[in-house]
Length: 123
Image (cartoon, rainbow, N blue to C red; front, side, top):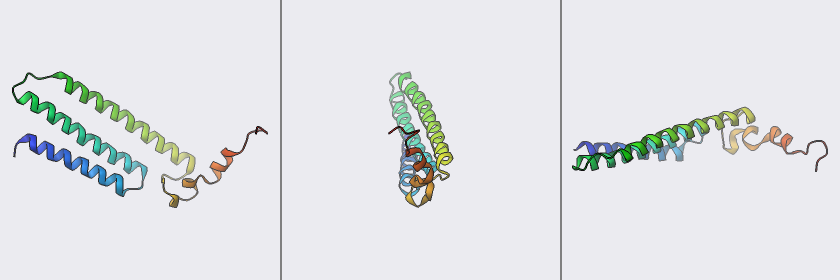
């Protein structure tokens, strides 16, 4: 088994585990982690493709490497934003769940009703 095939299989496993995590886990934080697994698998596939071109005798191209580094930074920033939004969800609703079984927090409850009322007679 060549290293390229091994890395390709590892990438497929990462993507598969990420999709499984997205489907099975109802918690938002676990969904974020599963989505990050999918992204890491895709980054690994892109790195393998870039490496195969350099190993085939072509001159090494820095563009795929720069694109991967940029994608990793953007994915990190998006993950940080998603975690901040989950923290805000917990702060506002008192529940970290997006499901209807999560209690008052997941359905809006009293906090959502209080925000929906007009302020000082404005209709």
